[in-house]
Image (cartoon, rainbow, N blue to C red; front, side, top):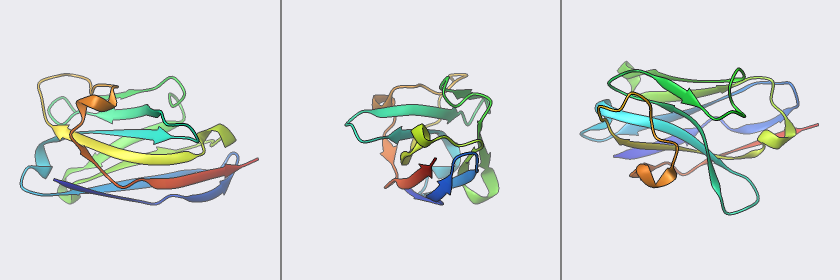
Length: 126
């Protein structure tokens, strides 16, 4: 499975950005997806997840009510729409995936995902 992320950029606080992640490979249509982000430090933080089987979403507290994860199955693409952006949302955003499971919600730990995209930078200026 290969993941290709895109859509980052530089925006002002209060603006919105949508980042995308295209999956390819023989099992790409049956994946659970997640978005993580990494600021200046080494830690990669969970943002949102979408499960293939349940089509359920879950979010980090920092993303609730502002971010929306969605998937276009026909395009094997997962999106993260980020509204009302804040300077603290500035980070490299990574899409991650794992083979679809029976879990209702996607895991929040990065170690649970086997496949990673290359990351796309979002910079929010105040």
